[in-house]
Image (cartoon, rainbow, N blue to C red; front, side, top):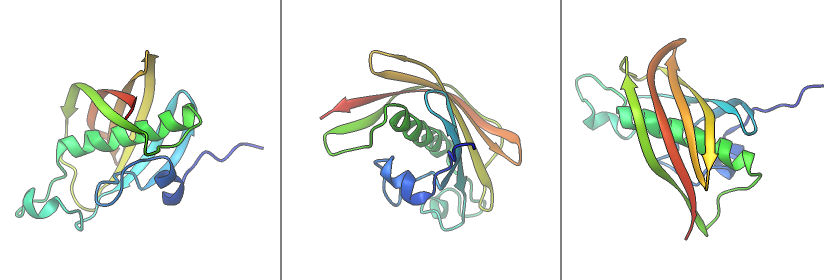
Length: 150
């Protein structure tokens, strides 16, 4: 019997410190503790950024695609350390390298977020993220994050 490694929105919210309107992961399709995660962001016209980016041709901002990858990475990290976000720590971006945006993401797209842990050193987590729409890469980046006590 295989273990179900999908997560619904309630489980995601248990493992993510973000809340509306900044939750950018709708579903986790699968994850492998300590290794990788595949998640989904359903992009709808109701997103709060579309009226300003851009009214004549709504496009999801590239940095929010990277943020969605980072949120998937956060879920994977919390699953890996077998913990959940709390009021005594914050999960920060520490760096974004080699970000590339290859195709616009528009309302109606389903953004697949594939994130893998590259390494963990002294509290810093380094990930490789790829975002796809219809099996075509739309963005990719190397992401560094840190979980800090506050």
